Length: 256
Image 1 (cartoon, helix red, strand yellow):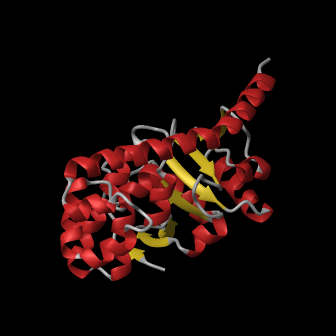
Image 2 (tube, rainbow, N blue to C red):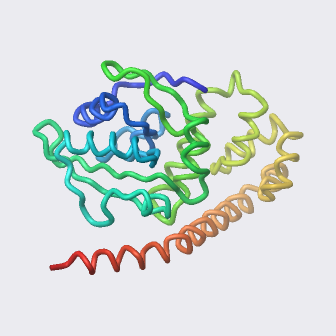
């Protein structure tokens, strides 16, 4: 289980995380705050958590939300069945120190394993006053970020770029393989292909656009990366289509 050196997360998010920790809730930090810890973002307004949905843990999550005077917004309410199907539960905090902060809670994300596997692969961080806390592993965070939202794709690129910058002088073969599988920067892929051509050829059997990195064809590589992104966005739209229908029904039923 890797550990991560991190910058201090500012209040009110620091306060919210402390309350979840004090309630002994089992959760993993994801979303923008996790991207900050991995060095790929500078600011995020919201807090995104992946949680275990066994009943004892849901009770601890509810205790933390109650302490934060968090109201459910949108739909659905905190429910194990909805979370297991892939929905997110959204809350807005109303204690003086956390007023207005939004918390989004999920347990299943498209393309990701179940929470038990995510928990086993988690990265541990140490935050002042909070102590050790779990964060989605970098590969899992990147998989969770491959959505139909335009703003997520630059973040995927920056996450890999930050990882390369931090580790390229001491990279393991497994880490370089991960870069070949996920890097979205044409110039970086071509550079990596020159340094590790054999490994690039090996991974290219699964990610065919790497052939362009090996040949140095930046134009074709960039085109293939755009097509790869479009394909992921389409899969995400298909994944969310039935869930959106269910959300609309819940929202309709909640109207007075």
